[in-house]
Length: 257
Image (cartoon, rainbow, N blue to C red; front, side, top):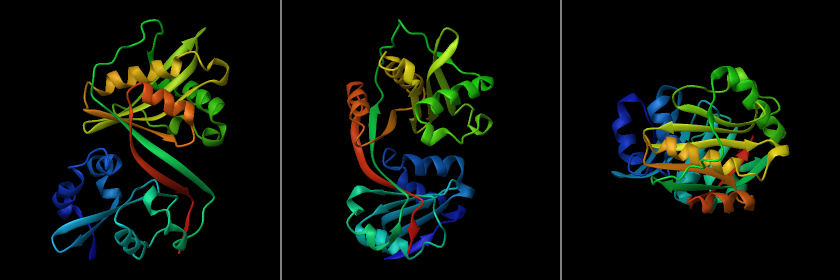
């Protein structure tokens, strides 16, 4: 086995590996197409066979793919300190030997929904947000998930053709918000939240259906991520047609040996 850090001249070889599996390599394809020069890619090979990938992006997220032996070998190449380590759950058994500690551990599921017709909720109106409304969107996120969003700033949230924002209003104020990323290779609901005072009214499912309809205008599938122990959300997503695809771990602020 040998590992090579890829350069611009190796883009075709990398695409040959990740382009065949857009659901597994959703984020790697995102970095490949939108942020290649600020992302580090390492490809593991045995002879001419590609057997694993390590991707480290500008946000400090490290993702690993391959067999146990391949992932172990990747650790010897790490010369940086990631903010997040994301690996398939099957690597859990040997990770402790490489991880000194982590401040936070998340067991996550990636769910996928293939392109299909979406029946929108005609009884609840959805608004496409303008950039000037991002502070209102952030306030909904902060009310619903203060631990994750308390230190965020509205002007730093991405807002463009790829990063779309939808909301539901009551008495002129947003009460539910969805942040949806749409790429040519697939869509991704990055975050969705409803203000605690307005939950269990069908707002989240309405926004998900709307985001799916928007995504399927350009892409063939959509993914969403949820904590494995968030049973209400999992039930709702599966009811909307999402299927379980990948079980993985996220370690926040890991200290690598």
